[in-house]
Image 1 (cartoon, helix red, strand yellow):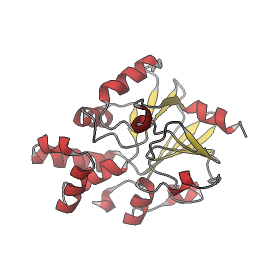
Image 2 (cartoon, one colour):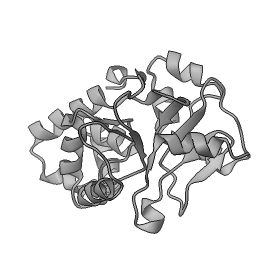
Image 3 (tube, one colour):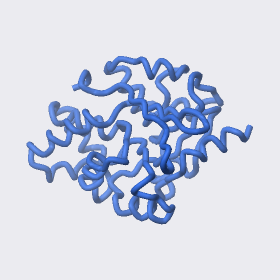
Image 4 (tube, helix red, strand yellow):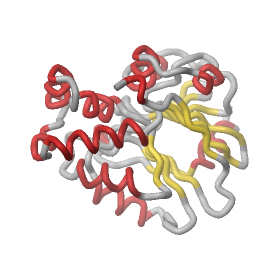
Length: 229
């Protein structure tokens, strides 16, 4: 399964509308749609970039996953929950681990549907994204940058180590400020804080678990924060 993952995807600037960044969602599909509407998301011009962990814990994991997979202006990186869900389609050990992470919703899937969704996650959700913006470039990855230089992520081949490094650790968020080279800023989810966390040019925007609210911000906000030293 690992060798079928996409290590990196580059996406060009949106010249028509606005790009948005969204932290962990965990099955809160209706809440996400409401948040997008309240923030003035334009479904015809705007794009939204999800930072992984779309599934588990919440009530609408399947609906959210299908929406992310089949909506043309929605992109997502692979989160540790999607990675474990997908691995569970082939590995009983990972299947049990996924259930322990809040994946009971997948028990309602027929095996054929489970494997189909798993294969679509593997095919559609890269481990990292480089997003070109008017003000610079953003590196998007679920947990944290897998390297001190974003160029390494752009050039990486898929290995189990690389997949883990993109989806599981949180030490960079707990450490001192550090600048990741080769990119204006890196934006992640994963760590579950009550506010956006910044360390150098690294940002973590997962606030759902601590506040009950999904963080959805324009990508342009990251560049504004970068100007605040």
